Length: 99
Image 1 (cartoon, helix red, strand yellow):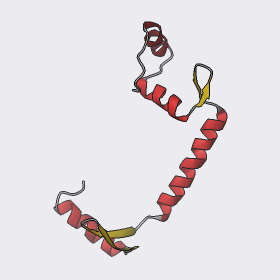
Image 2 (image 1 turned 90 degrees about the vertical axis):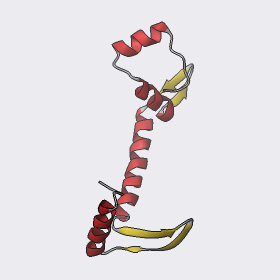
Image 3 (image 1 turned 30 degrees about the vertical axis):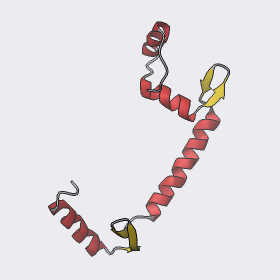
């Protein structure tokens, strides 16, 4: 949770309203500043949803892409074939690098 200290009243109210520390962090991160606190508005939710959709679209576009790195240097980047993806996953599994 954030660096906020909770009053006894706050502890009781959070419990009654089913709010946890993660919820408070999200409200403060995503919400709009309001007098004496934060408020999560419909606009805030819509803005986050749009941002997440853009991020998801970018991630989808990267399926199958591979980057080759040696030390601190990027050597190359390309689209790995399905056969190469299976080979890389198998090698990573054998080396204990993945599940």
